[in-house]
Length: 477
Ligand code: SF4
Ligand code: SF4
Image (tube, rainbow, N blue to C red; front, side):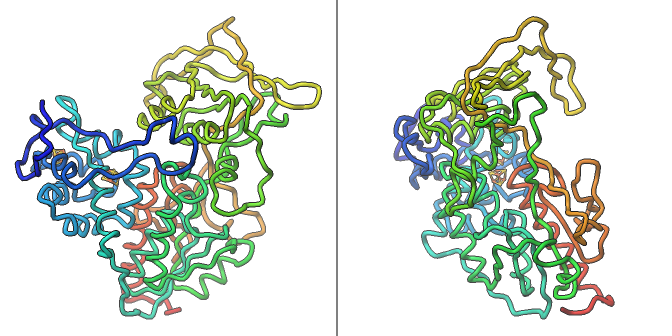
């Protein structure tokens, strides 16, 4: 295969002639000195060339692989012709944040993993093309804030994370008056407080929120629904409610020693180090410490890479399965490795050890081996007898995932039906058991991807619009 820098993308189906290119990435030695995004955009010629690799499948598997069913072949084709603004317009039709999703989607498991070129060759770089056309449109002032004629109805969105923002966007474009209630002091949810800026710049999230503000969406921050305002009050003031409040209750580490100093949950650690404002969380000293991260998901990768940027002496990830069965994105795993993280696979903690001052000093571990696949399809790990060993650590970060926070018993949110692990039950239209209350995202499905939250928010907006448009006794609020 050859690279011709003068290639302009007009020749289609060029996957045999053009290698897949990876997005320009800053060198690891440079990027670990700051929290800025590590990837930059391709130039126009490279985008056209990369887009020309697509064979324009009649039944495009990439679309099926994208949770938003993005119209990928259409905008890839336009990108190959250099018609970037038209491409971006089509991408916006199915996504409320096409500049954000490609920054955080694990494409290898979604659109690019499904691309038909994948296997004989490398897939079309769909994520990089989507990001490029979206940034191009934003830079050219071609992403208008759509001010629809008010339809007289008001909808409350609870939670300003990706699902809440997507729902607010969809409904405001239909003329609904939208108020977004957010318990933090800035809108953005996990996009702002959970995902590190080296993956998703804070200014990218703020820019998207500002488009919604220009669209007329009102944000009420520092308001906790169920505490500062009741569900009953919201149902009085609004025609419908969307709950996109996430899942923030950390799954515990069930071994001795978790009360030692220097043992903390991954999410508060990430929030403390990444939030653009002070959250009043206790400081966590990382410089010069030996950090052990427990877990194998994207939060674990984020903890490792954040600790490296905070000058940890050593960062080790201990995960109970092997690399093939690790849930974290391969892209983020590779980035963590490049930045100096070490991985100890097939390793489970047995206890955390401390010194006389009550500070953690080590993680006692046991080697694991993989047995038969469990219900999730992944092979179940089991301990190898007599294989115990110790990892030195003076900061242990637990990144085992999250469950929804239970509603306070005295809150009227507790009338919402939940399942065994506290997730809100919804029907296929995102409706809860309480009339006019809808829910989606992590509070329904457990910790998942940004793109899944966006899909739920869009689906709920569609259901809300349909329900409120039908002749019914629901009063206008
Ligand atoms: Fe791929 Fe995610 Fe974009 Fe869908 S939203 S096309 S999965 S990067
Ligand atoms: Fe193009 Fe791949 Fe999608 Fe086919 S599956 S339309 S080659 S991006």
